[in-house]
Length: 357
Image (cartoon, rainbow, N blue to C red):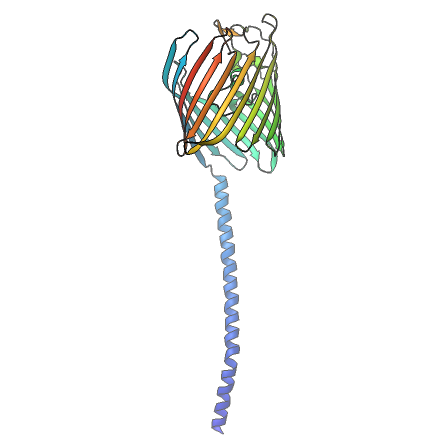
């Protein structure tokens, strides 16, 4: 009888053991799930805190470039010139103030005779948001009138006529294929009031075509027109139209600018300039490179002079090739032919080592 009872107890105990083990395992799994949930919550809080610290900090990036030039020119009278220059050095500091505001400052050195100081070429603050089409730029930067397309190392004549760095305030809008901007700038000859303004609008299509227009109410008050032949204070407006097309490795662009009349000059001429450029990205001697061809021409510019010299050339043609030298460097070879308003040509060969970081 005792043996039978003992056997029954052992049998019952063995039968109950799996149920007890299953209950303990279920309890442990529940505790483990709760612990994982706690860890996930702690990790989420930590990541959010780190993101907040990152967004509230001011990360600073520094970039720069330097160009070294060897050049030789043959003048119309048969004489020749050559030179070696550190042509330009730029140092740019970018800083994110917060998620809506960024600062950018560029210090620049250019080899321009006796004036070889490092100066502030650009200092701007940009206010924008990824989910808002509007933006605001304030500070000192290039007046965004001309659209300088093309990869030629030498600037086209459209840049010569419009190169102006000034204090300005710009409001921009960009949504889909459409973009526009309006800006006020101080001007060069009269800084007692700010009444110089510009407008730009552009359409950029997915098929590689882009078209734009621009207007400036007073190009007379920009840096290229501070000359002794221009003595009047009346405003001279200017307008622009530009077109570009990109397909695979080929890029084409065209730009046309025209001013209103310069009343103080004989015949009240209207200055105009146009520029055509072609670029083709290809491989040169085993590395990425580019071939470029550009031509620009001015009309009615012979009376715009300073100290007896024409402000602008009659025409400029560039033919160039560039090749990358590993990372962050390229070598450029360029031929330039420039014609003045007396019909004389100057031929120039430029060899440029361009570096950036």
